[in-house]
Image (cartoon, rainbow, N blue to C red):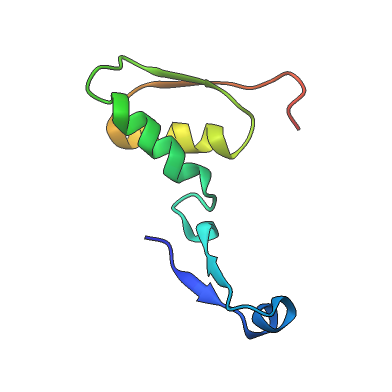
Length: 82
């Protein structure tokens, strides 16, 4: 579970009570882990492996989720990845 925080400054600027969901506290530091883990979980019983094309947080999420589920993963990096 990711924590929810508030900010008096943000509340005053927006004129509302704002709630901030801190996805940066996810296991790998990005919200992509939640989606990647969910996707791998959906096919963990039938998949022989996972393949994804990404150079960023999605690639990291799939790699970690696959490792946690004991499923081999192949990450294809674009040629123009930074």
